[in-house]
Image (tube, rainbow, N blue to C red; front, top):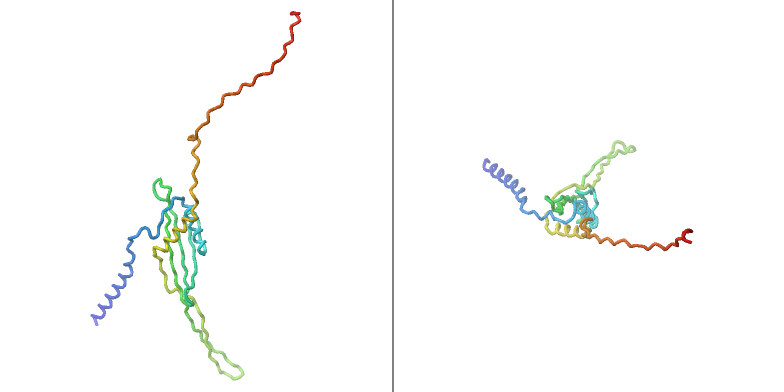
Amino acid sequence: MLVAVLVSGCGVTERQRLTYEPEEFDSTTTHTRSYTASEAQTCEAARRALLSQGYMIAAANQELVTGRKSFQPATEVHVEVEFRVVCAREGGKSRSTIAFASALQDRYGVKKVNNSASVGVGAIGSLSLPFSSSDDAMVKVASETLTDDRFYDRFFSLIERYLPESIEQAPPAEARPVAPARPPVEVPLPLQTVPLSPSRG
């Protein structure tokens, strides 16, 4: 019996260890993408990208965008995907912004709950007739963060379509060429008749 307990204990430890093995922190590009834009421009592009795919936006500002979308892959299966995008400026004097994206998928299943009750019939006496009814309820059965590279690649490519095109800025005033000043134009004065002095006859 002691051997069986030890074996079962090893099995539990092994299952617990396997649960955390997929998290290896070996990829830095699956959930991130860098854009030559400000945080506000990047998050606005992410908001429009989610709206174009039917996501209901729950929150949106210059640094964060969250949206949720529902799916019905089967008759008694309901799936919801919550998408979150965080926009952060890169360090230094860089004009680029990093978009961090993460999608959480919740799966719900139909659970039937049986309810039983009895009814009394007064005309007959104490006779009761039992009957039962069932109520269907959606219960969360799984929750998982999506890690498919192609899923995030398509989303990041869609963000690029909604980023504003780069506009060439005009040079500052001190760098603009100064046109040479034109010389003043001399306008000739009209000739006036000077009356003769009476002393000159």
